[in-house]
Amino acid sequence: MKIFAIGQNYSEHNKELNNATPTEPVVFLKPDTALLRNNKPFFIPDFTNELHYETELIIKFNRIGKNIEPRFAHRYYSEIGLGIDFTARDVQRKLKAEGKPWEISKAFDNSAVIGNFLPATEFEDIQNISFSLDINGKTVQQGNSKDMIFPVNELIAYVSRFFTIKIGDILFTGTPVGVGKVAINDRLQGYIGTNKMFDFNIK
Picture (cartoon, rainbow, N blue to C red):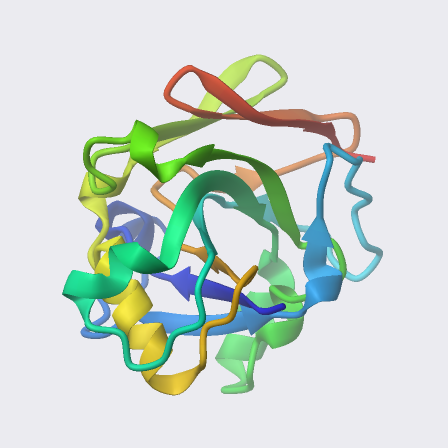
């Protein structure tokens, strides 16, 4: 299975990291070894001193597709979830400054936290879903899919131009403003609306 991830898809998040607004989706991949499921603890790797959380709505694909038109994209998923795209920000910053690919700052083991999924039919509009992250009981990140630069169905259409989407593949749709550093003993709890989607600890 493949994990597609979208960067720079919320304007306010781009401002906090001094990124320009993209004119087309920013796509990168994570391998299946990046998955962390079932609320297992996350262990901070030894190659970073600045590990950031990025809370994101995620889509699970249920059909094979290629060159999908946006108006048909909703047919290719039936579940919506919440996850964390962990980023070694210090590593990413260094690699970007050197003009090098920054895959290792995003795609390392256990960097793609996957929480629970909800049926897509529970949502009237996929572009109006609120979600949030609490750390140690305090809300640190809040977002709504209405603020995406590129809507979900456009993301699916774009990704499918380059990659064949297969059953079980995952799409991380980008993070809103409010990313920050995690530390050992932090407890992360993610919500879609009032539905708790994940609850795990940093080790």
